[in-house]
Each structure stands twice: as structure tokens, then as C-alpha cells.
Amino acid sequence: MLLLDAGGETLDEVMVAPEQGGFTVTCHGGQAVRAALEQELEQAGFSRTDPWQAPLFGAATRLARETLRQLTLARGARAIEYCLWALRHGEAALLQALSQPAALDDLLRRSAATRYLFEPMRVHLWGPVNAGKSSLLNALCGEQLAQTGEEPGLTRDVIEGSFEHQGWVVRLLDNPGEWSGGQDLDRQALQWARSQRQGGDVVLHLIPPGAAVPRSESFVVYSRCDEFMPAGLPESGFPRAVSVKIPSTLDRLKDALVALQRPEVSPCSGDAFVFSEELRDDLRRLAQGQASRETLERKWLASGE
Ligand SMILES: Nc1nc2c(ncn2[C@@H]2O[C@H](COP(=O)(O)OP(=O)(O)O)[C@@H](O)[C@H]2O)c(=O)[nH]1
Ligand SMILES: [Mg+2]
Image (cartoon, rainbow, N blue to C red; front, side):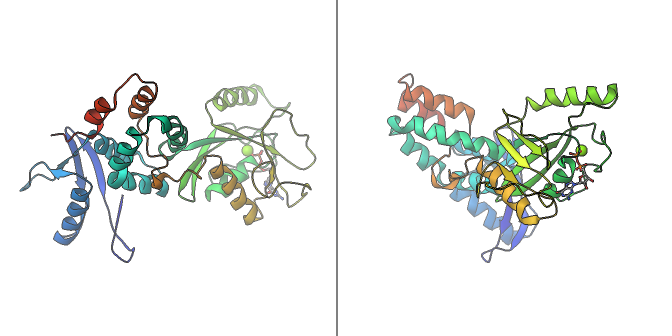
């Protein structure tokens, strides 16, 4: 979590660690920084367990505790912004949700997108050897993570990287290429990568110039498009064309990937504030008439110790 001054400059990085019955918040700086942080936390409904010495804050409600726990898992600017919003407004948003059980299904559906804030989307790069998978991983992540080159079999491991775009973190997994040559080791590597692919959220199938498009792949990316640019592609979404030599194509691909996480759901508007699995279950039960509003209010919104 970053602590900013009124002008938006970063003052300090604040660490939050869960503790028994509350949270320890650690920051650098002097009395003024500490006082400002304490004021923020108190406004958000937290109180110090020992006003004189201990720096331990006890959360006012179960919802606030969940939110702070979630803050420690947040990846990327959007996730952090979202948790800070929920610290201030989550209780009001939950109260409103509880008073409208008919609208709960809709809220829960929108809230599913928040999963990617805390567990970034896993995107597998797939396709024939020399499609440019490893080069694309390196270019998107801005780091030399994987070896690249024309010799087939250079990538034998699943290599992981990540990037942040529009505040969302995306995890990328580079895979060995599909080819009929190679040794046992290459075949085993490919088989292992295939099994790993099941655990991903999205598979991008890279099609180099001249290669055929496999039928079942939904996210087709024409790679090395500086060599050959296919005609008739849509402005946004998939299929798209990409080249590591044309930065704008990399940015548009990042846009398309982030769009898959449904960021049109604005987490900081009360649109989708439900990130706890347990709270989701409780709200589902309320929508189905299996739980009462009072029980949920007591559980999530009552002031704790
Ligand atoms: N012109 C061009 N060459 C590329 C591009 N991406 C990769 N390459 C080249 O294609 C070859 C294979 O790239 P690599 O990333 O190792 O492919 P992989 O086998 O799919 O991982 C290398 O010589 C790269 O330099 C691209 O966008 N444009
Ligand atoms: Mg490779």
C-alpha cells in the first residue's frame, strides 16, 4: 500500500500484516506520517487495540477485516485502489446490497471479475515453434525471461512472466512449441506443458505467417505481423496481429487481454465489492431465502473486539 501526500507524491510504502485479532501496520516516517495513517484507518472504522503503545489495529467489522486481509493479497494498482475503496465504502455498499436481495444475483455476477484482482489471469502462449512465443513473452513483460531464436526446442520449460497494464496484473506462460521433430525430451516437455495449460485461464494461439489457423482456438494471435499483416481483423479484441517490432501492437494486445477480465466492472463504484468467497456464499443464501438479512448483518457488520 502506498501512502501519498496531498499532491499525489509517494511518501512511503506501508506494510499490512494480519495478526491474531487484527493487523499490524508498519510504515517509515515520523509522527506526522503516523498520525495521518492513524487518522485514515480510524476513518475507515479501525481502532487501535492499545492507544498508548501497541501499534496493533483491531478491525471494527468482519467485513473490514476481510478487506484488510485482501489488501495483503492485492496485485496491481487496481486491486489496491479497490481495497482502499472498500475500506471506506464497503460497509455502506453491503448494507445496500442486503436491502435488495432481488439484485444480489446481478451483483455476484459482476463481482466474479474481482477474482482477477487478487489472482491474476494466467495466459498461456501456445503455437508452433518459431511462432515468436518466447519473444512475445519477453516483449510484453519487458524482460529477457526466455531464450529466443530460430533453432527449434529452445523452450523446454514453461516460463512465467507478468506485466501490469491499466492497473491489472496479467501472468504469461511461455510454452515449448508444437513440432514433429525433436527428441524424447522435447516430446515430454510438450506433453507436460499441455497438462499445465489446463490450469490456465486463457490460451493465446500464435499463428506465424503462412501457418494454418487451428479450428477450436478462440484467442488467435497472428504473430510476426511485421513480415505479413493479415487483412480484415477487428479493431479490438481477437483475433489480433502482433509483432515484437511494433510496440503499438503489443499495447493493443495488452488492452485485449485486460478487457477479458471485464474491467468495465468498476470495482470502486460499489458495482462489485464482494471479494470474499464466504460473503459471496452468504449473499447467495440470502438471495435464495436460506439466510436472513439480520444474520448477515450481525455476522459482517457488527462491531468486533
Ligand atoms: N520479424 C519478426 N521476427 C520475430 C518476431 N517474433 C519473433 N521473431 C523471430 O522468430 C524467431 C523465433 O522466435 P521465438 O520467440 O524463439 O519463437 P518460439 O519458438 O515460438 O518461442 C526468432 O529468430 C525471433 O527473433 C516478430 O514479431 N517479428
Ligand atoms: Mg520459445
